[in-house]
Image 1 (cartoon, rainbow, N blue to C red):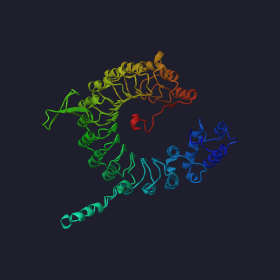
Image 2: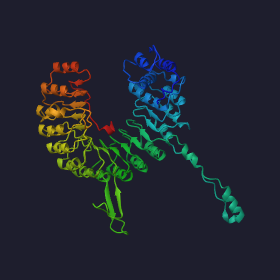
Image 3: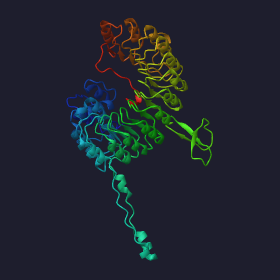
Image 4: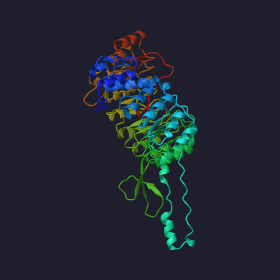
Length: 536
């Protein structure tokens, strides 16, 4: 039963909806007519909860968050969190300090603050200093805050010094026992008074003011931190990354674009943070194969019980063994880590739970490095964009274990041809996103698997949801073949075809026939890029 079902009467709910969104029209008090009679920005709401969610989100986005102060019934904090997230997507610039003050002072149970690209300042962050704050997820990506206020949020409280012990030599036995009984204890409850103590998820990507000081403070205070995102925080160096080694529960780390981070720092982090599940190292120019050797799980055993040195072994059953590395790793991005070679990619086959991998822009990796990885498991997402040395052998190996593959980006790869593409598309029945842009050896023949026989079954018994995105830019694909793909794939939502044989008239006809299909016919100033689902 939802909180709406517990509302005392539909008339009360109707008045609240009208209060959240001015100008709404409700004629009756039943659920069905309430959904049908209320216009929510022209968007269809299938349930009453969706209608209330959209109404509250538009109220927050339009600067009327004060309506929550005068709400006639209780609105749960989780519902406000969802509404705030939707309001940020509607208009992030409308989320100001005044809006956040209304939300935080009227609903102290809120645990998540999605504030990406909003207009908040240090004033909002200071509201989190209050003892009643219970924030566990804080997203301030792209916000203009100061390093000082974040430092205060993560400031470790000062402990009162332990009182000086009495001089035992000057006390007799009875006085000593009395002194020990009356000695004040260290007040550890003050250590739990830190404002950021409950944080489990902290997103700071794109905040240029974040430095090693901020990261170190966060790692010291938020010992339960599980998710940290520092993408494009270019002022963070090895010192900040070293501080993260003190977070044993860290599972998600995004340090994309941190050019100052060295290979040694990443290797040390991988050895200590063995709980990592998602790791984004894209565009970290100093990262090489040595880091991947530390990330891949290995088993070491003592030569004997006395020796301090360790050596790697293959037999996991030997006594006195210990496993090092990130054995739980499920997603890894190495995009544009140009120093990574075959030896580094090859050891990733030891990551038994790895399901998503991005090796785009690695100029020196070959088929032999990826073969053991592709043949040992069924990946769900693989990005090979810009692979200059990979051939059809990689696609054919991927086809053998492609039962779970939903995303593939093989664009800008000169050696992929119709043979490899047809083999893969015929086997990967769960594909939802595929990019083959700027592969000069791909033609109509390679795409026949998308339109022929059983291969075009979209939602079959094997759980496939159907193809949603196809990128074919700058390939020699005919208008007829593109039309066949559009007609066979009824769930297609995005088709990127600039530089192909598709005519302007045909593109216009496709938009008319399929109103839900977006056809990108001309080159865009900012081409759409594909990334791993874990790092979207």
